[in-house]
Length: 370
Image 1: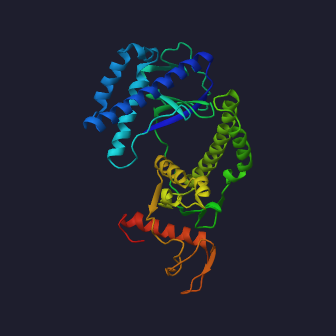
Image 2: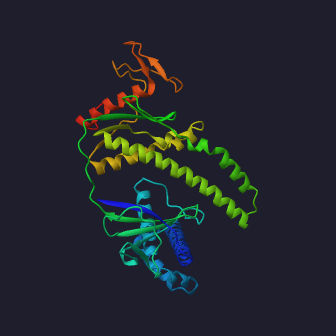
């Protein structure tokens, strides 16, 4: 399998200048080729693919006004065209929206293939530089990277992601099966009653974030003080994102280590987040990221992660007799079944139903009616 190992590194002044030029060239090539392809289709109904885009890039590099494109490695420029072609493919197949232009205010990234970097004796060298990157290696790479991606986030931090071949270690078979119901009060609840508290980092840092954003709004555009204030806001956002990922990685690792089968819901988070009252809380909970981590970690460990139908009434269905309530508002946290009289906790009952439905899907296939 392929796996990316991400490390933080601290560039020297030489690396900062080289990477700034590389990021700028990658961004310019992506945006200019995207504009060229869009205009060609709008004006002449001409469809251009990667081959035509690569030829256009060669022509651009020969023009005197764009000679600075030759100051950086050609590999990241070609890779940006490949990424753009993938974006167009996803768009034409209906998976994403039309490709958009890249901004210098957002995350910057450049991908290097094997002929544009060297990895030897624990040191990483990139093209156009003779000094190694000062990488903080937190773990040993399982193999020599096939590609690396160097990125700089909005907070000014530099990272390198190394794509390597690795052999996943299968965990011993466990006899435990768990059903998981995600929520806002608790991050998730299992069928056995275990709850993982929702840290709510957006609420925790709301006052500090509002203060920094007020200070940013008062700074003059284009000034150095505005750049400093913007960096403080970006660092706080990065801290919140890192805290969320830390909680999710610890929780998902514990679930995968302990259970052989994990049953979860297939939530339409993109539709749910349109709720103006709950959108911020739903985004802060990161339900999609929770399920994504469970799936790839389960694949590595030899576990089964089963997703049930998103319209399955897990909260309104009695886990004892199967009676389904017609309506149940979100403020109802405990209820009694009118058919069998059993008292239910809303989240635990939903987790039990998800577990039963997941086992049915696992045994009979996705076409089964839970």
